[in-house]
Length: 173
Image 1 (tube, rainbow, N blue to C red):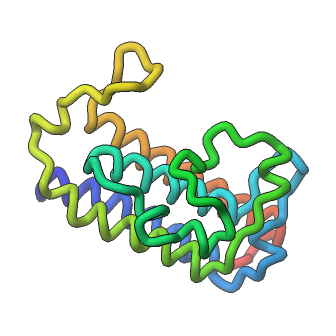
Image 2 (cartoon, rainbow, N blue to C red; image 1 turned 90 degrees about the vertical axis):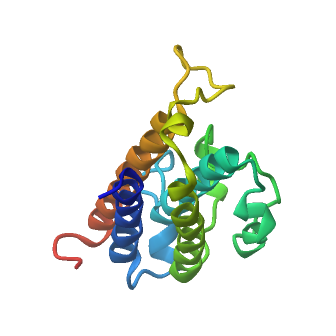
């Protein structure tokens, strides 16, 4: 197995987790917050996909699918490439209204497909390149950023499933 197949499989696991978690949820479920300063299921699915899109687009040096394919319109948001959920405060979480689960999954699938095409083009030298412009010391490599994004995505998908359990109780699936 090649390294990019393993990484792709990890990102595919995010999609599988989201499909499982979002199945059968209505608008009220997607936007429910356990407390006013907590994330909703829909926000978590949006945020993890937005960050994945931001990272892969940055590495590819191409426009984010959020802008290019006008996903922002489907989410009722502005065409702002910086709008990824990073730095959102409680009032931002309260204002967020998720589209339906199909739209959340559609965006995730589009970003994943772009990643599937991109990962095999990366060389070991690319993965060792320093990712410039981060506040981290020492600055991470491209490989570290891809793995960090995968880790964050899996954690957020798990958080979404946990919130569903809080909302619907045991045996929701």
